[in-house]
Image 1 (cartoon, rainbow, N blue to C red):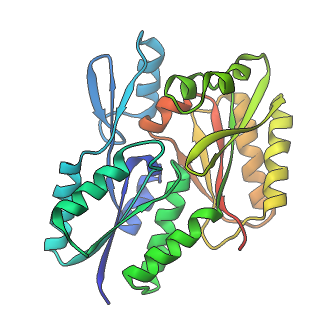
Image 2 (cartoon, rainbow, N blue to C red):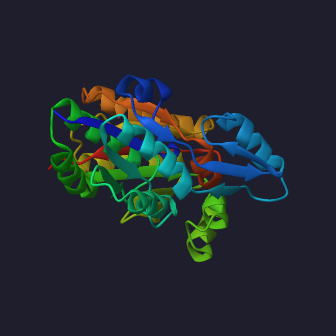
Length: 283
């Protein structure tokens, strides 16, 4: 079988232990705050970053991976005899996917496959894990890419946000969408759909927020083909209750899950007090 290397970017928000276990190459994006630039997941912890963000007078800026960095990484693995499957965050959210395509074009190699996950954070992470699973099952690179493209529409999410301020500041939501986020006690239910963040519902209080999430999980159905990823973005006590409620639901159903934490690039847009779940729906 061909040697295959799965490459992704740091917005996949997969736990480090899982990345090392699956031997995934994760290329970091960067984030700049107070005139200092940090590599996502390398130079600064989430808590350190959030503290800087809360004290800063200017919002942080995130930077995509450059074609030159992709060129460097791709060259390395091609020289080692690998075929590359490079899976990245939604092209509607970043130019990283386009950078990967530019690097592939510069190398003019048929051994590089670039996939737009049409997702971010653990939605991207789920697609990466699916790629690893297919690789372990000895699928060819072409078969893996076809299966991944077919999997993208099955990746679902339901996310609880306390505030949409950071999503609005970062251009991920419009000001009109964000205006409801400032209302006292209102919790926002978001999802990633067609490569973009969207507000699905708004409820008052954490109990109703949890009920909204669990109803969606029940109605949609969770496939155990890939373990769901339960995501924490520095959740406070109320949001931890929502997070724990999701975990309790999965445990009661006998569904194994993986806990994950957002990185600094995703944290730029989520801020504190967000949580949720990404999963594959049943075929």
